[in-house]
Image (cartoon, rainbow, N blue to C red; front, side, top):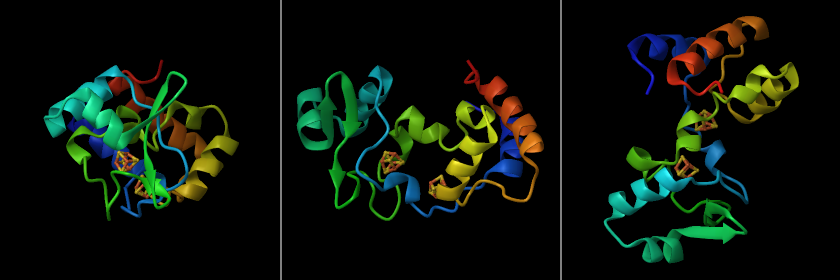
Amino acid sequence: MPGKGSKKVEEKIFQCRFCGACCQGQTTVSLDENDIKRLVAFFGKPYPEILEKYLRVTGNVIQMKIKDGHCIFFNDGCTIHPCKPWRCRQWPLHPSLLADRVNFQTISSSCPGLASNIEYEEFCRYLKQILNKSGANR
Ligand code: SF4
Ligand code: SF4
């Protein structure tokens, strides 16, 4: 979890506008074992029930169901915010942004919260600091 310092750095490159764009579409992020455990604890229901109601499985990929073109948990914001999947927490500050400018432009065009007023190189410097602190830059 990022500390206070990295939160301040984060604000330089990202401030969520709560537009919900990242929760729209025909797919969602995939969930790992810990995401599932948190969902089970959050709802206090057995896993088969959670699976039946909220999740969809394609091969060995588990995602959230889509309802009306968005994640089933979206309702004017994330309704499972305290236990949302780690990939939702990480978004949009993903290591792939460091790979090249095109990734950055692609993600920026779908997320209005990413800073548009700083140079890509400066953006990368801040993002590296954040990822290094959170241990996500592997
Ligand atoms: S698209 Fe970006 S600004 Fe909009 S809710 Fe998602 S993270 Fe926040
Ligand atoms: S879990 Fe929450 S943040 Fe993640 S896609 Fe669904 S509604 Fe959006």
